[in-house]
Every structure is written in C-alpha cells, then in structure tokens.
Length: 137
Image (cartoon, rainbow, N blue to C red; front, side):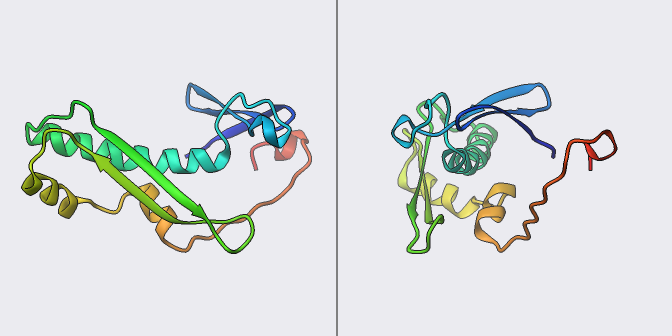
C-alpha cells in the first residue's frame, strides 16, 4: 500500500491512492477551511469501512438483507494528549432477527484495519529533502 499526500494550503492536503483522490483538512474552528475530513475522522472511517465491507459480504453470501446497513464508529479522547481510545463500532442491520445478529457478531474477524487499531504497531517517520535521488526512498 502506498499513499501520497500533497500539501495545498492551510491544513489541507490531497491524498492519492491508485487513481483516487481525497481532501484532508481540519475544521474551520481550528483555523482551517474544513474542505475534508480530519486524519482522525479518516482513521475511524477506515475502521468502519473495513467492518462494513465484511458485514456486507457476510449478508450477501447468506442471502440476508443489507438494505439500510449502517456502521457507526466512535472513539473517545484519551487522558494522554493527542490520542484517541475506546474505539466502538456499532453495526446496524435492519431486518435481522436477534439470532441472526448474534451469529453475525460471532463471525466478526479481525481485519487489516481492526488489527492496526487494536495491536501495537511500529511507526517510523523520517524527513527528506526533495532531491531526485531520494524522491521514492
């Protein structure tokens, strides 16, 4: 996986992955232009999208209704600065019985994004100057 973010102005970046583009920004009350989601909102979006895609596949394979499927993701600010914690994902599937909902819950795997949020990870951040010899390093 490879994502490139190009700075535009203020707190705004354009993220590119494959042939897709997405605006990332901060809220106006934080002095930005609010043209896109914040990085923290995108983290929650990634988690919800990962769970949601699994649930949609689960429902489709079993011939269960997926109309109205919604995923709500919440996290709380941590007591430690610049951290969020207590991620909660609620999957809303109208039309399923309690028995079907419990079976769905038991089937939840740990996916790529869930593992990234739930497990300790290594993170390395480096800075380079834009010279032709290190652009892709």
